[in-house]
Amino acid sequence: MHQLMTPNIPSVDAMISVRGVRKTYAVAGSAAARKSGGQTGSRDVEALRGVDLEIREPGFYAVMGRSGSGKSTLLHLLAGLDRPDVGELLVGGSAVHAMKEDQLVRYRRCEIGVIFQQFNLLPTLDALANTILPGVLDGRPTKELEIRGRELLSELGLRDRIHHRPEALSGGEQQRVAIARALFFAPPVILADEPTGNLDSTSSAALWRLLEETAAQRKMVVLMVTHEAIAASHCRRTFILKDGRVAGDFESHGLDPSQLAHRSSELARTA
Picture 1 (tube, one colour):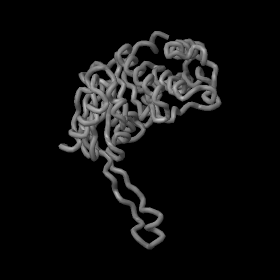
Picture 2 (cartoon, rainbow, N blue to C red; picture 1 turned 30 degrees about the vertical axis):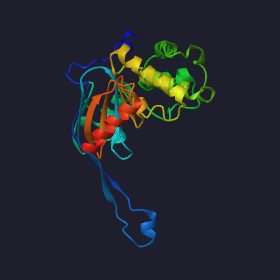
Picture 3 (cartoon, rainbow, N blue to C red; picture 1 turned 45 degrees about the vertical axis):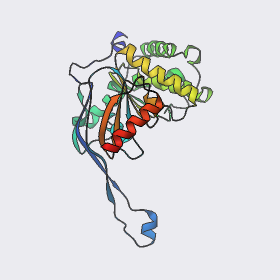
Picture 4 (tube, rainbow, N blue to C red; picture 1 turned 60 degrees about the vertical axis):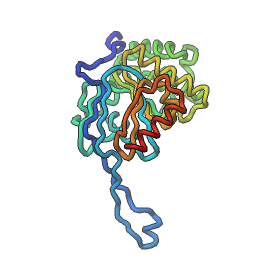
């Protein structure tokens, strides 16, 4: 299973490169407007308005911004869950914006790791089966998959929880299973969408430390979308999004949450 253990570090300069990315959504008119005889057509909402962002070195990074700033849209585009209208997205050397649908399916399964706020574990599968699911879908031999899955779950402190289903796991344990699944093919980049949104403060702090350690030990990029300054304070660098554009970025590791919140507010105010 050595081929699964070695991260696919790209040979290009940047591990993540976003260039001039724009994304507009058509939003239908409200039911109230239709009922009152008002406008029934859709309106365009410009979620991203020319985003440029680059990450060259492994580490734990954050994207912060108010609701509606475009941070989740950016993450979905990087994950290949949606396509940009204009611009380029390169992740681990892969041109995500130019992929065909079958290429995107394999990219999402094998070349990128994604951690969701809702965990997205299958309730009928135990921790091991949820962890090895990407390999099963890719048609890999079950015995090799289970060896890899057990190694990852043990590394993440879940050796004694391998055969527990999600309902028998705490929120923090479920999120660690989700991390093990995201790490399965040792991708160069993991994307985390508000990963502690459903966790208590103690579990959240433990998860941020785990993501920071994972990025450092495995020489990979973990890019986290968050609205919490305390979460971003664990990150090497924080990018601030405002109205669909990058307002700026700064070194955030070592800043306390109040300092980080002030810095991000100042960047957003002056952008």
